[in-house]
Image (cartoon, rainbow, N blue to C red):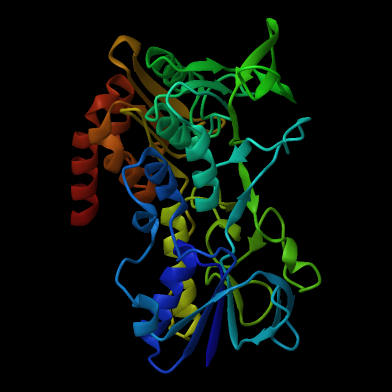
Length: 422
């Protein structure tokens, strides 16, 4: 049996290793379109800071790891999938056959339609190549403008701040991390950044990037409710979101919406073709709808489930991925889980201590915790996720939490013990 995996990120690597574990005789091929060894994009900011060398970003550090597992790595881009003849057309001009195929091609950064966005000196921070280019320009004191303040952007933000640059962040929404945080939490993170001497424009939009004459490379026009501001920049970084890498699937017969639609076994609508990670659009645990969850824990879980099904093991199913985000912004820990926005007809409670940089918001549907947002309360991160994922009825503890949301630990212990006895 020949298993081919498109994508050398965490999902593809985990899948390949588990296929080998389950089937010692299988042929396993991983196709990745970057020249470096398989690495984690989430480690790039740490490389940019200088905490780790390039090798520190690699997913596996043992020499000859893939050779020892008899897993072949091919550096190429897949241009086309022929799902009838089970054949891949590669950018190198050769073809690769498969019996089982896993598409773990990940995602790529979205480039906003801004005049000047293609100028040299304007970079995303998505690949090791990007990190090298940014490091060459992000010298201490350099003026840097980052477009976007989402989850990934905030990780990049910290790396830049620790390089002692003069940093300005521009975000279109009314708060930072808008897809992860409500207005109170998102603006607390903004205030924290301002406290750390990072300028942040929310409700801001970069309208143009122009080459400048003089001491700086660019003049960047930023539109805000107060008017248009001209900012100098030596480096501009775009961090305005990502989208699944699925363009090469045209004509393959594979159903693509926002991502590749997969069932509970990570299989697509085409027999013997599976998808996992950032490119896969599977069932959301909380809503029951199909969504892309572009986070590394989901990617690795997908890879394992796909591997089990590709080798024919029974019982490997994805019950739905839970929306979960944990972010460290220069020492301020924030998190959100599940339906943190709440649902119509649901109840909620919150505790706000802005002077202590702490915030807790709990969302309920009947007596079940369905979503949570937290800042500063690191001891509750696992408990919030556990209560949401277990869907345990809280009973009388719901009203206790509405009165005092800090009783999460007591509620968790009482309700899980009660459920175990029943």
